[in-house]
Length: 226
Image (cartoon, rainbow, N blue to C red; front, side, top):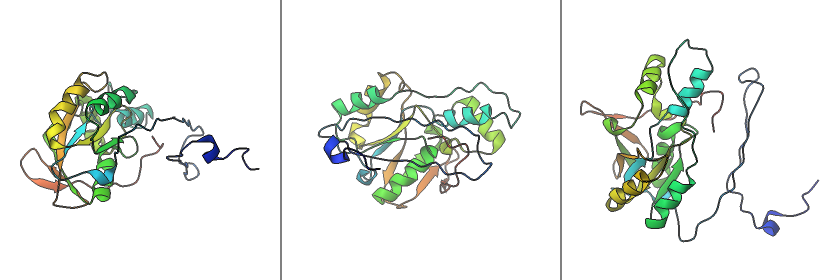
């Protein structure tokens, strides 16, 4: 049966849709689905394609905490650790930044696939490289401990209250100051920069001064977190 009104008539732009697909027996019997309604801001244009060489890569908080929390809640690993989800609303943070710095190039939520997957998507869309500083990436000690035991990388675990921003280098300090003044982004940090080299790749500058490619995004952990 067709709907009594069309998308055009309602004036609603459908930005994204999602379909959950999993093999028999792979997931629990309950799926929780939520829907959000957004506002299209005037004079704001953000896209992964807009990342430019020299731009700063910012995360608005520590990473991997939500995915780590969900893994522990499965109770399959016999690990006890105090890890809580970072779930938080971020609209006020976005609004505060865009009010003062409307020329932010990229804003992405880092839920599905974590920060690592988001950065690979941006590198592919912009045809630029991204160089990360390992020591600058904020990860809670409890999350580092759990992921170390399980052989996981926090960069590929879901975040529910942390987003990625890519901003012009000259606006970096201004954006950080704004984020630090708003709840849920007090620990925002620069973790790297966009480069002309290694197009489409994400490179990690390690703590010992060497460089290595960040692994290409792989299969998602189940249950799906997005």
